[in-house]
Length: 166
Image 1 (spheres, helix red, strand yellow):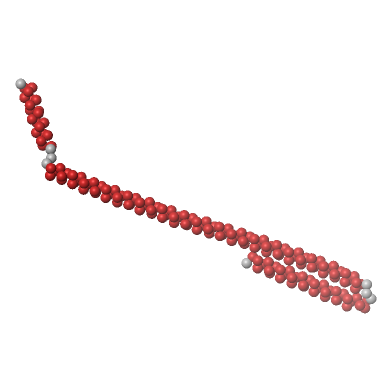
Image 2 (cartoon, helix red, strand yellow):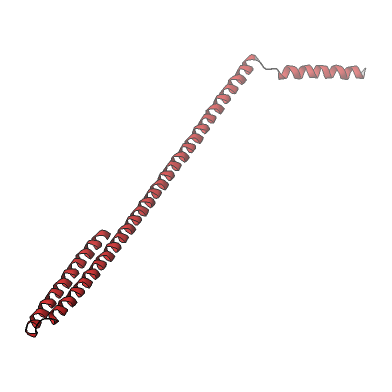
């Protein structure tokens, strides 16, 4: 009998426990409301977290835009500097070429003046002695005028060449 008594006792205890764990409709309704409130709070927190994450991502995008614009501005400035430097180099080369050309024209003018002076002096030597002195003075004056003219043209061309660089 003791087996039956134990079995009955267990059944009664199990029935009692089952009755204790069963909730009333009010308690069940209260649990549902609490679950709904908790779910609503979880959704609200998830939305806030998502908004914060989106705001952080947007801030990163904006920072990247600013960085990209700064890099583009640096590249633009660098390109402008390179163009400016190249322009200065071209101007310097033009100036140097103009200076070289001016010197070459001067050298040619002096060579012509030297040649003309030598010819004039030779012609003066062929004249009678009384006329030679005046002829040589005239030849020297023409020679000096040709040299002065060549120097003036050279200096003017060099000044123009210097203006190319500026």
